[in-house]
Image 1 (cartoon, rainbow, N blue to C red):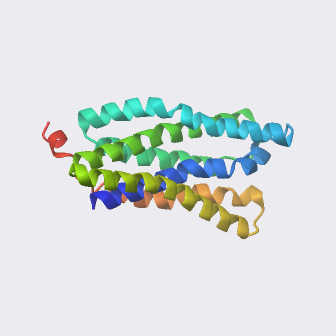
Image 2 (image 1 turned 90 degrees about the horizontal axis):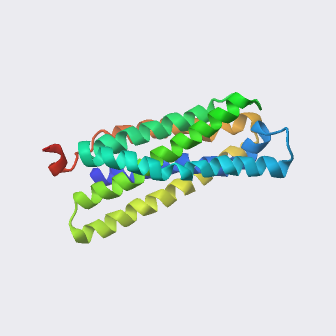
Length: 201
């Protein structure tokens, strides 16, 4: 159960992290219509990059929480934060103003902060609860789950595009799907048993 929870949770979190990049061209049209298409796309990808800038900070914070209070207390809030941030992007008003742009940046920073606690926390938890031989195998699965998250994001993005909806409405669907996926991932994470030496502190 531990490995299923970790792997599926990782996949869902990286789905959330990836769909912003997939939808960057659409977000550029919606939130930055006041500039050229190239400049709008560059701004959109710049906001996408801010998520990566937050990963070292998130790693430090969630790493400290995991070391001191238990891995579960780090990876459960991580999946909650990721889901909330992703859904918030999906409900932002489609208006080009300072509020929506600032909210978009803030949500992307929160995504980067959350995913850093997810990935490192899962790998550490797996290594603590398996034999050295099995650690490599399951850590590889966790790494593959991150790639599967990107694949899932691409699939849902493609399905959304194929529905031929107006992009001012359809772009919200992949972000809002995160609520269902995040709830499922949270239910799995809550069933995880923490590392024994941490629970005995």
